[in-house]
Length: 357
Image (tube, rainbow, N blue to C red):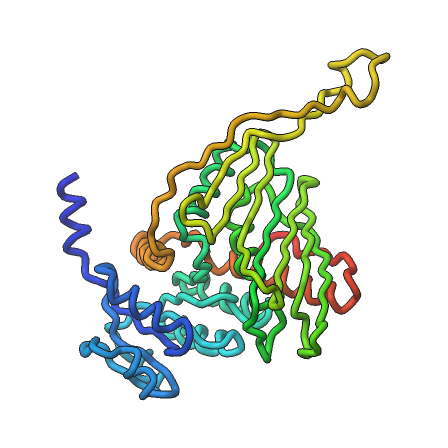
């Protein structure tokens, strides 16, 4: 045991480069710098001055606009991509072809086809490809996944997510592609392996004339007969981030904006007696019974999600295993987003998803 600890301590940090110094890049820079598993070598951005401002006092990290120089650096084992989705394919593909492990911001790529190229390239080269589905690394979502997978909630009957706030209205993508990846990645993360979405229907509206949907509703059919629903909205005067996971045994409510009680578990619900359990002459209503048990709020620790994500990236590389949110998880999210976009075009038509990824 001591030997294992010593190996863990003396293991050389992995050299990493961050590409993109805009909205999300600085968060990655901060977390890679704070991790003893990585050594940040480069911050690459077309605007070198912006990169230098982000680095501030991190004098050991080089700022550059020359991506080729980053990929040519043998001390760089991994590249983290925090650029617009339309650039993910070219940047991540170049990194994989240079033999680097790759972390990509959500969504994995601009299209399913592009995402598949990245997944195939990584698998053929034996490299780690990971999606930064950040919410999956929050302590709350980790706890929800554990409760679902352990059977504590029972068979899943429904999932309902709401992610609404005022703005920021995007120019290049609709509210679906902007906000829904969060909820879809969480859904993919928490569902048991035998439960998966098989079809989606989406409805959207653009009441302000922004040129793309500003309000959208997604309804997902699961292969078990259960249902999942996602509401995303740029126009809400209030900010709401809640997810309800209803099971046969218990129902869980996650309120991400309530630090005092992020997760509440209700032993309340509806039970349906099997027909053979009641006499033939009893009324149909007798099949239904209501359960009114306790509400429990489990203690959830506070830890920055990105710190957990960085640790998972390091573990996946070091132990040569698939990360929890690997490239195929990113593909499954892209599949739903593309199907939902098609559904929007056809006024809410039900669109089937690809079988297996």
